[in-house]
Length: 483
Ligand code: URP
Ligand code: ZN
Ligand code: ZN
Image 1 (cartoon, rainbow, N blue to C red):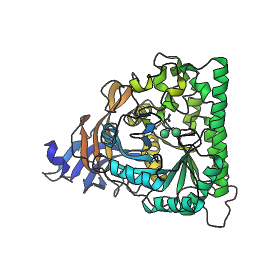
Image 2 (image 1 turned 180 degrees about the horizontal axis):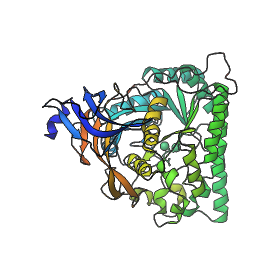
Image 3 (image 1 turned 60 degrees about the vertical axis):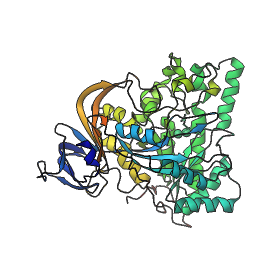
Image 4 (image 1 turned 45 degrees about the vertical axis):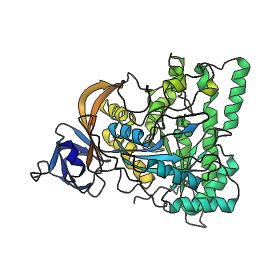
């Protein structure tokens, strides 16, 4: 009886191979009150009334943690199609049981007001656990900036996003980024950066216009690698000077990953992420008949860049996240031929885990790598207590995967769009069962239609990685301490 599972807290996932960040073990996962109570020897006795999920010949992974999503994002004169209900349902169906969203201020709103608004949008309708990143899109009075940052921390928000791109929408100048980093370092918050130097993007755009090269196939040139690398190097330098923890989102270039790694060696608490589309696709997508659908910032790069990201996963690039941005085909193709009017971003909250699991089952990486990149490290870096592992005491967010299934990304996804950049992509492995804090929200690949029970996750300030008044010296690799 599916309906009663919601109330039933006792669950055992039996006979599976449990994937931890460091190893895979044969164990039964015993769940009590929404948490993992034990990883038991296979065959642990269960009470008659207890619910049992048979995971024999299956892998059991912690639920995915996606720290980069844009649900209901307004962008210029359009907005992504989804809301917290539909996005969180799609997330769960794709094996993601925690996500962190951005609270981008609307015109006239402060970053704190934006977080409060986003909290109320998500409350009561979200099916998995979630939280927010504050976003600072303008800097005025510095005392007020410090107050806002402090208030974010008091709201349980330990991250601030800034953009060095998208002039007139959300962009900060470097001097403003520096001010945000100084305030964030003081309050113990991490600063996430969309790093592309807008003036270099604009310069490239002028050049393309002069040459009449403004079709979608020119998108890789419109936002060139130099813009990403230039911004990355600048903000890493600012992070070093301000002693601020920094996280570069959607890294597309091995050179940027190397700059992060170098910053770490120089004592900066620096992190980066990439996304499945940057790891697996290449710029030939912009010459296809669906080119508009792949427009995103930064663009999808050359095959060599994508290949160069893989060896950097797990070090400079500690996570793989979706950058989920749910525009549909009508929105992406409304202004054919006008690159500047295609809303950037790709849907992906539902496909991130299946695609990465599939890559692991094809031996591109290991399943323990998937756990580290898509759950454990993000939980650690972002201070998501109880998330990202199936060790006893953690939340019972889990995914049961049949490794033998061969399918493909196709229609029938649950995101509020009608395409995926991975349409037709062969998938090995199928997500069969998903539990969110011990509740079965997906069974045999199907939504079990439970009432939304997602909770907002408050996160503590980061530990001060840099003692006040001390200057991190070379070789003092700063890392977020395990909690
Ligand atoms: O193209 C993208 N990535 N759209 C979403 C907004 C952002 O820049 O992350
Ligand atoms: Zn971005
Ligand atoms: Zn994004």
